[in-house]
Image 1 (cartoon, rainbow, N blue to C red):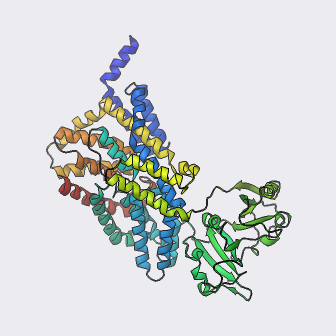
Image 2: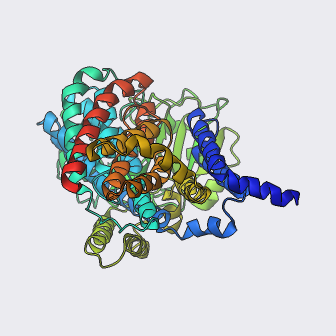
Image 3: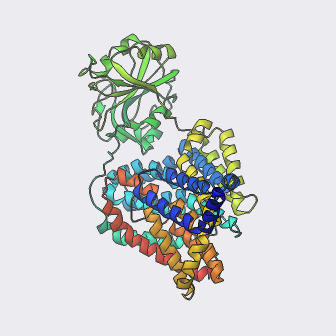
Length: 597
């Protein structure tokens, strides 16, 4: 009897219970005491606890194709990164930066914009940050003038296609669950291009005086702890004998800096690009770990230094080892480090936190906490573990680029877009087929493919889909519509679009965009149906507003990345983002009204 009475009370007040859960969830998102995914799971658990959704309803959210599509797009993005596709485009632009710096900056942003339209924009920003820093060094532009615009451009790029951001896919999935027709992959492109145009104009007119000057916190190539000092010795059979340094593919990499060339006669530190190479010449370079490992199997060079035997660059083992403070060789040359004369191993490179040596690799003086990249036979590598003067010895998890498979990765993504655009198969099926193709072609290994998937995003989406279902079944959405109806019943359609956009964009700045998409989309659809108008324009407004997070560094993940990399203040985003939010929002709402209403 008591249990039945409690159930009756819950059923009577379920709409208000759902509203309370929603308010508490928003408070949890804003406070950030727990990760967003945890807050979403707790919200789903609350609906389960009150019996508003049952186990069948909970498990039904796992049949939604949006999270599967998003996961597949993460893998496709990972394949483009693994094959060096994004880096190759950036390298080409960096080479042009000295002659036409303004054009190079514009090309870099255009490349980031296009890439973000077809792959997840978070890894695009991660890859582009060091490249933007180097571009700033080459062109003389302050990195702080470039990093925030990089994030904003990638956000705008993601709004131009259905697969450009997870938010678009989620809104589409929720709309389909409400009985609406699925969105086409390029259906929102006209609105996205208008929004992007408005955003670019706002950046051009406001960024020069609203964004701060100065260097970013992340160091430029050659000084970051992830950059390694190494040297490449030209082999007798090298195809680069008799060619200039400027002809080397490695000299064209954005993540590589050539600091000197040592020949039998002299050492060149200026006008290095004009030096003609001979067998035995040594090229002193600084590069990131992935580039260094990618060169490991190159037949044109010997990489690093070796004293005992001839440990080749293709040794079975590859580890990173850190110099202990008690090491007796501290202050000595790296070439004289004892284990080089005791083991048949090769030191491929060394790195030091923010202060790489300016000498060549053999003559670099050893400091405590220097990290070495070492290759050799498994037996010799095992003996290194016994060395008390080395600690933190671990197998490197960084993988070499697979540049020869870049055309396959690009082709797979293009095929996914084409199949979805022509309606041959759904986006979800096309994305899964694309993943199968890149795995079969070994553009990316299975382990890397799964690690490319952002588990937090998928958990958040599944949990929020359960919360959205709970709000529907509790009657909370209907309650909110009934509350808003008297206020919005008599306003013009354009004003209604602006209201929905404003609600969505304010919530997005405070909480995660995916959560806003799942909560506001059914509200917009129900409100449109209640007012007797087409819900599609309002859904598009939600789609754009939930991605248009410019005013804070916490509303969108790419903002958070550049916030840390650029050592910005919170107010820097507010000053640069508010004009962008107004300009993009105003132009987007007008475009939706004139093209859809």
